[in-house]
Length: 361
View (tube, rainbow, N blue to C red):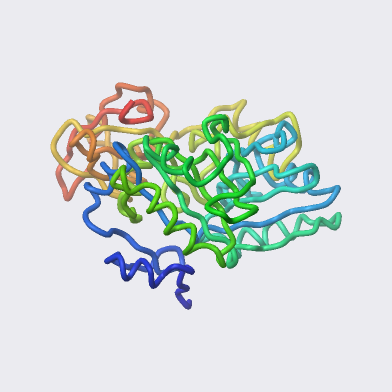
């Protein structure tokens, strides 16, 4: 498969970004060090270029009907300027992808999907488009900058007359930003550090990137790579598609019961409702290492008797806590907060404890 470049690829190379292939794109994984970049976002402000993400525009009188049929959450509750985390269930109990649904106006929505699933999601949704919804894939023409951290709003406010402090979490506004019209400013992010995500036509991407860095100079703003993005989201216990949820994990097993609304019919809703009533046999949990060590994807999880009870889906060293943290599926009997579990790290059973997410809370 051909690896694509995001529109500002050369800019990231010139900034010293270490470029790696990720989800079909050449992406900056770090510029300085993962820990330094992580702490920049937790304490100040950093910018991720996540223009590899996919964006679909759905328009027409049947746009909401289509979204309702393919997503697990209830998009009928959305008002203009509101966003909603959701997922696309498949027909066998798993998840096609997780996504964010933006209601721009009546009969006008934007779906934001994972980069590795752009074609898969497009084809999946298209097969249900039996009522003539106007669907446009604008992924290649849209750049997305996640400006995250406690100094993000102070940075961005310099570039727009819109009062960003009035935009609630999981809401957005469309307006002029850094002299560019029709920019989406969304109070969302994948870090738990606060901030906004800025969606802009790729023609204006470099202009906006430079304006953000000029505005954030006084806060020592920095570009942030995928390495810190992963440690930041893991500290919050946020799922990464392909690691923590996938085609074989149900939303209920993955802790996404809160975005699975049974007051409407959607793909595989009857089977998922039955699963909810009967209860799941395994659950995705957060954990913190008690013994010194770092867990990694696919490491085996055992109980005190040495029996296999699950596996790690994501693991890292938390820069904030200075200990190993992770997510993994375990049997119900071992899923309660405080449960003692053991991670098999190269043949050694290292003790860990099931913990509430966010893991830094």
